[in-house]
Length: 290
Image (cartoon, rainbow, N blue to C red):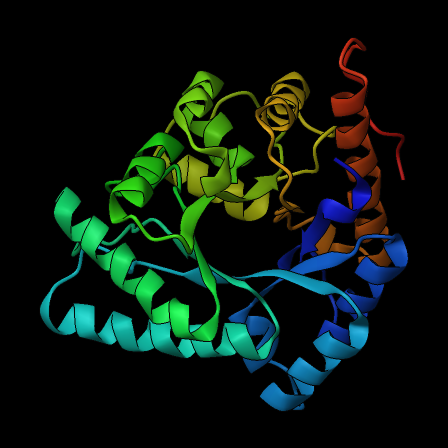
């Protein structure tokens, strides 16, 4: 594990797309996660946004997120397939290699296992001609899939080489999922690890989990679950995971700060994670305040 593997989600930063890209690059991080809003909200249009991303020199970790895709039927399913195709095209145009799909929260979605497997297999097959991968992330408030072992089992059943799992520490911590479940996963099917923490110990209801995830996340080393996050990073390293780590830190307070300030916090957090993987015998320490 080294700092080249760490990136920051663009939605953690305020300001224009260009300002956010510059802040991430100047902080010393090499990659960024982008969303459709970064592109469609750009005042210069889609072409200008894509040009800015390419000029930044940053690698695009992924493109997110396709929501409420799996488990639908009839017109709803056809509609979501059209949306997915458009997002895959945008993902490719940005130079990203992966589209992230979140487990469905829709009341219209079936939880029937065969349907979930079918839909994710279809999405992966749509991504093949574009040379893209699909990462499936279990939201802890998902309607039918809300823990990573469920997502991993569905991905395994779908049986597509370009379909894998996105692990998110927030959802693991909020759901209280045991890290021992990682022992049953194929490390090669972990396409991305997203890291964040939060300040209170428990988020019991789906509503509280969603609200905390959307507004109150903090960087690893700043929150109330430092030991658990260090354990997660160590375990993944011991398993042989050598993929990307992304800070997905959505926080209303951070959006009041200059993007450079937040990006520097991300870099400090990356150093904190690397330190606690490479120096396993040391107690957990918090990063120095920015």
